[in-house]
Image 1 (cartoon, rainbow over the protein chains, first blue to last red):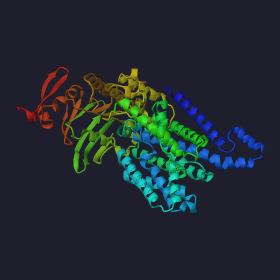
Image 2: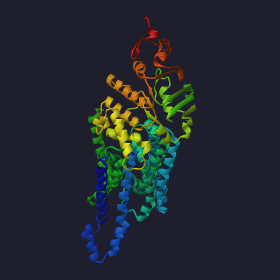
Image 3: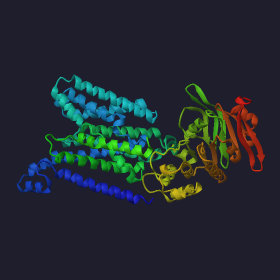
Image 4: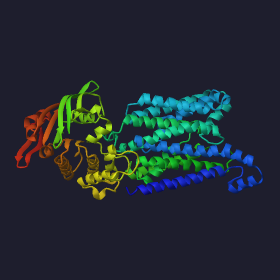
Length: 333
Length: 261
């Protein structure tokens, strides 16, 4: 089709922006900002400090910003396509909250103090339990059953997190829980990257495999079935892919909302509204959004550094309102 | 190619929706599946494509049970147009029709020339070529119905089933859609359509299958099936009937359980 070149041009443009932002993310920071700052450090013979800053602080942060943003964009686009619902995002199937609960338990029990990796591992465990629950509750049911099961899991996990905060007799643990829940990629190491990326890439693979079926699903489940789509397989791919990748993201960054909702929305008109094309475009744009938000957090001078999850929610909330107003004017609802 | 439905029963929560039903769909014929609301027409069609509730009995194409065909093999033999006319995204009409080639496409490469050709033929058959680039959500009800029918035609399967293809359409589009189905059958496909319009069923169909409470009540030529006695028994209506040179004219007239009131 004639719009194919335009689609690839869009992907190329998004890839260029992503690369530039990724590079800036490595270069920009509190110590020695900009290329000139870094070169100055080289001049002063601080190469050891420099490599420490780059490898241990900035690179993990940039990699996590990119992969987490991409995951949220990709999972959001896939879920919107699968659920045929423009307001779907990874949160709707309860996976982020379940992963968050795993992390909260690790902090609450003090396990994360004794063994730092306990936090991300418990969070990934939480996400996997949520997938099993989802498959058991809504494995063969309708899309509505899936959403209801997601809401149920989400509220149960939310309640348990509140319980943990309520019962916590250690104010430091409470503070740590609250800060972790706000969502951030500050002070993460390469260990976090190695821990999360295998899960994230596995999730991407599962989600990408569902892409063609999502196109057929725009006609509804019955038509898709008649065209040879295996609905059970698609559900497995979408639910497990989202849970594994988003669970792993939540495990290292805490809860970062709205990226999965906002990004597919902005991109949809640019890819001709085709669900399968929305996937790679949203993955790139999700990375762009999170890398920019993280750069903003680093460069804005606030008494304490803003949390990434707070910034995305500040951008996402008003965007959601704008969306409602636009839908209202379009359909008069 | 021939679709055979043999002794099929479908139960939904202890309630038999389809009860020991048998029928066939052969290439080159246009069949109307008629019957009152809740007779089991849509349930039967959904069951044939493998959706909905568990069924007993046998569905087969050319003697091969559908359960032994892969989903893609079945999709290439039997196209289905569901009642649902909602398309979620603002896809261009042509992209919607291209989805009919789903059973033949693999990976993410550009569509093969024969897929493009099939889409062109389908769009031409429903006279939708002029608005093929427009978003499907911006089309009128009649235009959208034609585009979705073109999607089912683009499969170019030897058998086609359409669930209420003319519901909610104006008379012009009703006749247009019936003509398209007629042409499809004349070209050698087997076409089955669920209909509520008895007048158009009488005018266009080769054969009618009248079902009530999940069972076949009558089957045969329209003038045989649409007899006054059958329609009173199944639909509880009386009709005005006349035999014209171009076939029987049937006009639903009155509810029989309210006659004389």
